[in-house]
Image (cartoon, rainbow, N blue to C red; front, side, top):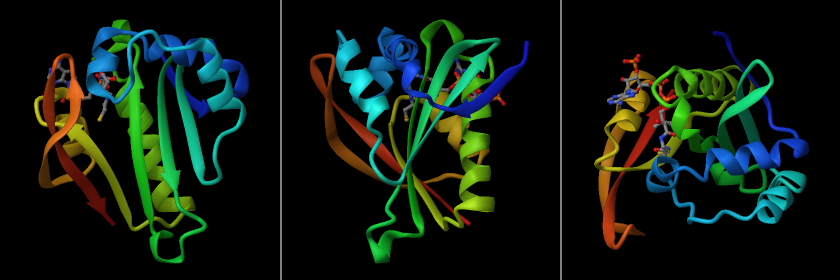
Length: 163
Ligand SMILES: CC(C)(COP(=O)(O)OP(=O)(O)OC[C@H]1O[C@@H](n2cnc3c(N)ncnc32)[C@H](O)[C@@H]1OP(=O)(O)O)[C@@H](O)C(=O)NCCC(=O)NCCS
């Protein structure tokens, strides 16, 4: 099985919606249940300036998505990128997350010249913390009651990787 990473295209919206409709994907991110196809269509059709959206595919099937947000309009945050991602529930633990983060780190280091990559991750999301550790992200602190998740507040770690 070969996982290929490519740029997200507008026509990927239904597949990306599916990625973020699984219970694990919703729990691990800031997505809500019942994701709207129209909302995803708009998001992918009109990505904001500075957003690099990538998808992981097996054959032609999209199984994961990663967004690298940059801040070209902010002179003092031009060196920063923020990551958010999800792998479809039935494809988790099979290397797609690794392929997506590797691609984002390569883009950041070798082409965008970003010094700092940052993200937030729920403190109990072990697979995600391990994945980010593997690429040199470290925990900078804990943000308490950062988000409401499945009936209660959840804490996140602020993690970053400095080049
Ligand atoms: C977290 C997530 C992105 C990881 O992607 P993935 O494709 O499942 O990860 P990979 O298969 O590449 O594995 C990456 C690492 O995670 C760890 N890992 C994977 N599955 C794991 C599990 N079930 N338990 C513990 N660690 C696990 C391993 O350390 C693995 O690295 P290794 O195989 O080299 O040891 C994915 O599981 C996901 O989308 N989860 C739901 C949404 C989410 O949490 N998004 C992240 C928001 S910060």
